[in-house]
Length: 247
Image (tube, rainbow, N blue to C red; front, side, top):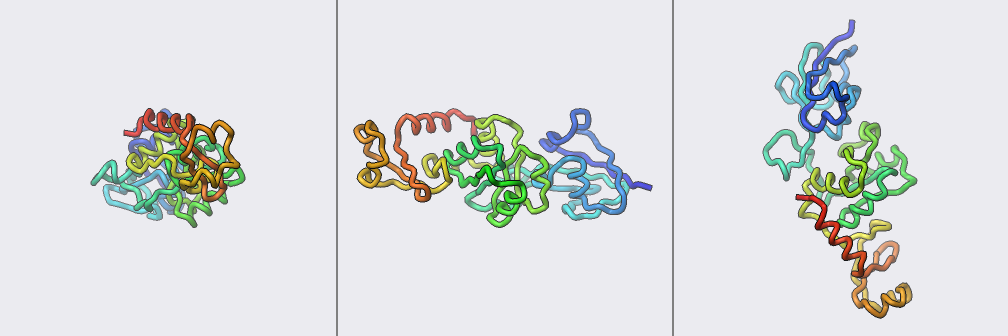
């Protein structure tokens, strides 16, 4: 005979539930004694989005065996810097925060690099590779694929609610409390390498004719050697970062 437990998901964890099952106690039937983590993911909520878990009011971990008749409250992971002292909080994030993105987030990858964040993105990465790199390099996985976040090797990750790059950047900055960490013109938009200032003479052969005439300050990627200067593209970058809502 199957056993039953009740789950209540708080806050934005309801984003993973069907419309008619949000913000209410959910009955979950099971056999044996599955880990709480397995039960929550079977319901549809990936573990990197989860913070604290309470079973009958007592704190519990992901691997706690689920028992019949219990009531499980599940809270979303939140940024400790933006919600001090409140439950739940993320596991301690490394400083600086580093990201790896799935194949569908090319625009967001450029925007994160534009804002100065270490962001890995390659169209050749499949889910297994992303999970392996994230674990080995302590990177946060950003994705629109809920299934990817359920990969057991992924410890920290976030499912983007919006499908639009500008809104996604705002989501990430707010989610991880990165408002004060934005550093424009720090990373290469193409390869994620660090950018350093260089003398004009060292990059002259790579410059368009008008750029040689009107600009004297230049920067170059230390990895792919792409050259940057503070032209109209730089002004647009600054305007964009000022316009997005990251308060």
